[in-house]
Length: 175
Image (tube, rainbow, N blue to C red; front, side, top):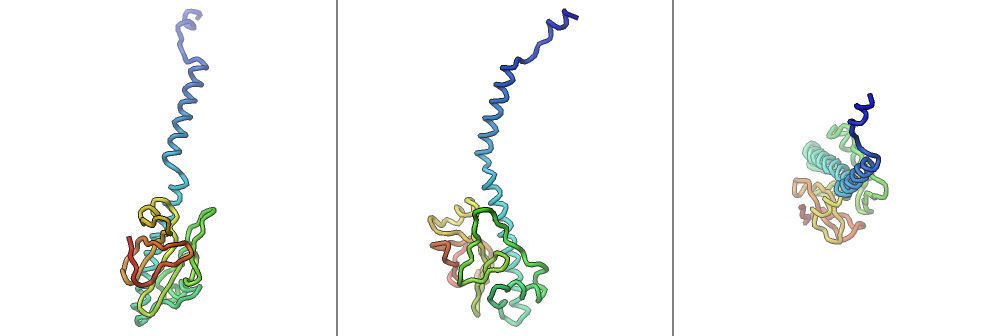
């Protein structure tokens, strides 16, 4: 038995500690590259884009079926879409700690989504949260919004000079 014990080789405690330390440093570096908070914000922005596109299509369908009128403005504008069977359940804007949705006094907020309308156009929007969307919007020091516009008939990104300024209904540009 003693002959076998002498021939068995393995790692020393020091070698194992060095290997664990190297793996730890690599894991920290990988987490810094991945940035889990940004990934979560991107996911929430993806949900916002999808919901805004859905709400935009519902607003357009409402306009068509109700005789060329948009849902009435106000805090319960999604209820009009639900009553007209354009949406089944009003979506809720996902939020995170320290993030404000940002609908302002000129707009009607319902479940965290903002809505503005006049006799000829309407917009549905919410503030973008992720750095990727803010960079893509190319707003500089302004505020990026995920927006659907009846005038342009699409969903995209737009900018305002400040978080307290709602996007315009007409004359809008979408990235």
